[in-house]
Image (cartoon, rainbow, N blue to C red; front, side, top):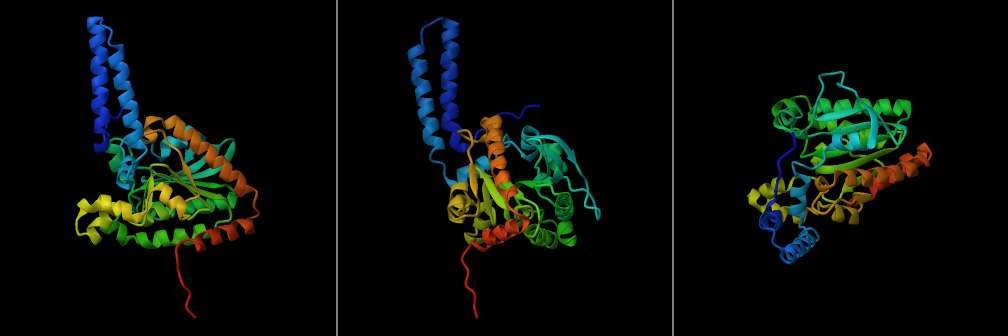
Length: 322
C-alpha cells in the first residue's frame, strides 16, 4: 500500500500553491476557458518557492527530511543497487534482531557483505523492526557478519539509519554498550575494505556501531550526530522545544560534517529529499560506492589499515599530556 502524502510544516506554502494550480487546471477543463496565463503564473510561483525553500534549509528542516516517512530506507537502496541479496539471521548467542539486517549480495557483479539498519514502513513492520533501534544481539549479528566478510575477503557496505541503539532495560541487561564497543574495536582492524552510508538518521553510538569504516558517505538531507536534537535540547536547554537551536549547534548536517572531515562525500538528493526521486538517489549512491570501492581495493591490506587509523586519529581536537 502506498504511503499517504506527508507534508512537512515548512512545505505547506508549496502545497497550497499546488492546490491552487490543480484548481485552475480543473476549472479550465470544466469551463473550457483559456486559463493558460494564470496557470503559467502559478507554475512560476511554485518553481520560485521550491528553489527558495530547498536551497535555504535549516539544520532542523534537514533533520525533518531525514525522518520523512516516505524516505527510502536501507533495504530499498539494497534492492535498487544490489542483486541476489541473501539475508543471514541471528547472532548465534541470543536471537535475531530485525532492526539490523545483514547478508551477502552482488554489487555491480562483485560479492559484498551488506549490514543495514532498517526502520520499517507500516506500523506492524515498524514494531517488528523496533523502529530501527538495534539491541545488543543486532550488533553481535553485525560482528558475526563482519568476521565472515573478513574470512572470505568480501568488502563490507553498511547502511546507517537509526535514531540510536535501543535504550530499554532488557537492552542494557544484555550489555548493549559492550556490544557496540566491541564492534568499534573490531571494525577498526578489519582486513577488508569497508564503506558506510548514512541514508537517514545517524544517531549516537547506535549508528557508530556499524560506522567505523574506511569511508563514510552521507546523503544530502541525512544527519549524523552524537545525540538527537531533542536529546541535546532536553539536556542543555531543559526543553525539547529547543531542538531547532540544538540542531544548529550540533553541526550535524551533511555539509557541516564534510567540512570537518567526519564524512568523505555528500551524495546529492532531488529537491525536497530522496523520496521525491528514489531512483536518482540510488543511481548517485551506486556511483559513489563504486568509486570508493575501486580506491580501497587498490590498497594493500596494511595500507588500508594504516589509512583507516590515520582517518580516525584526525577527527576532533585533543592534547597528549606527558
